[in-house]
Amino acid sequence: MSFEVRIEVEGRDGVRSFQDTVRVGRTPQNDIVIDEATVSGSHLEVRRVGEGWVLVDLDSTNGTFVDGEKITTLPLGHRTRVRLGPGGAARLQLTVPALAPAAGATRIIPAAAVVDRVLGDAEPEDMSERTRVLRARIQEQRAEVTRDWSDRTRRLKVGAGVLGIVAVIAASYGVWQGSRVQAQREAAAGLFYTLKEIELDLRRLEAVAGVDDETRERQARLESQYDDLMATLGIYSPGTPPEVQLIYRTIHRLGESEVTVPREFIDEVLRYVDGWNEADLRAGFDRARAAGLGPAVGEILLDHHLPREFFYLALQESKLDPGAIGPSTRFGIPKGMWQMIPGTAEAYGLTLGPLQGERRADPADERHDVAKATAAAARYLADIYETDAQASGLLVMAAYNLGEPRLLRLVRSMPESPRERNFWVLMDRHRDAIPDETYDYVYRIVSAAVIGSDPALFGFDLESPLGPLADPLGDDVTP
Image (cartoon, rainbow, N blue to C red; front, top):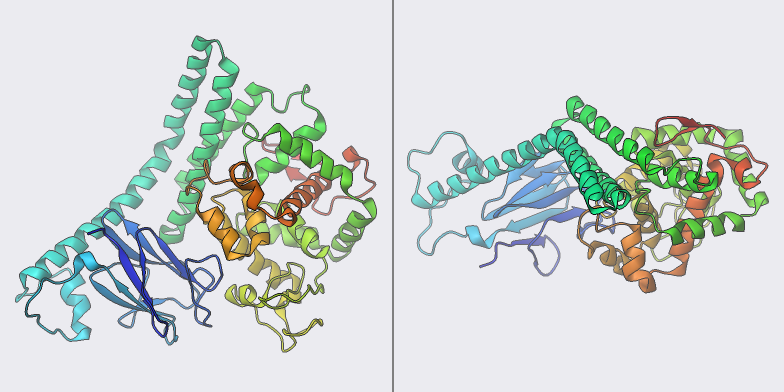
């Protein structure tokens, strides 16, 4: 029998079976979507760990409860009833068939005693063989979860030294083969994607165990090694045109590697830069500067460990207009600077106004509140960044625009790793399935971010709304 988990949402027909990790929440990006007030955008995961399953709360607003107790992580037994929120209507029945009791008579145990009997540290005096086996399995699962996190932490802490050795070996091998530069580029690409994997692991680890300063310091040293490789390769040397260097810096901050970017992408960004009308940019830039949006929005994005360049996503969505109202869609009317639809806005903590169903501005709708809406959008973008986009900023933009479940399934069909799930791979393998609107959307945002970093370089008589941006090599780029 395959080791699967079966999930039933109470009140719905049917049971769904899964072989891999399942995410549950309110937003369409989840594997199981539950549109209830007590359910967070990304509420919980039923996570595959070895040959077992673990229930993990994703720092939800209202919590995840089993037998009335709020849990953070919980290894699953045969059957587990889960409530999303302390008094919420959203309930799940989780079943792991491989842990089913053997056929024959069973002993009924009061519900209040189940947790202590099966999960408690002390063994029950009258424990049956089945309970003994179940307790042993759960303890093994607990130990495996602990080992998993410990292994991740150890891997993070030794990663800098190991990868430094890998980079040196790769470079040496390149010399031996007579293609030192190519070997260095491959080493840099490998180092970069490992950095992205470490970043994702760190985010997940810190969500459970808190900030690990030592690991963060080692990550910074690893990033310094990557910067050294960039300098060795001459990516930012005088021989590289300044406008191309600026594109490299921009995509690096957005979570992409300079050494893997296709030349066609650089050419396309420059084409989109040429396509911008200065008057259109001025309207958004001036509005942002007059209201102080650049520093305010940039700070909120940084607080959520996101690059400030996502500011330009709001430029594309609404021309940075907090009062913007979008066209009616089957998901509702998007409003505000980030054009969030009602379901997503509520899932990320915003209060909708009484005019949510009308194409009119609504002072009571928090989507029009710059600070609150930006914080909600940042949480949403961070969720995409950590899950569907696998730390690819360009893929975050595409996912934010895609919306349609069919296209999200396409992204999720790609392997779950930064190396194999990123914007370049999406375009290379699935360009025909990507709407031109989404293609245009991503390039418009990237090109606007490039212009905003140094308008004068591209012939625009504008002031940057964000101000100086730190470049990947440690210096500030001052427009």
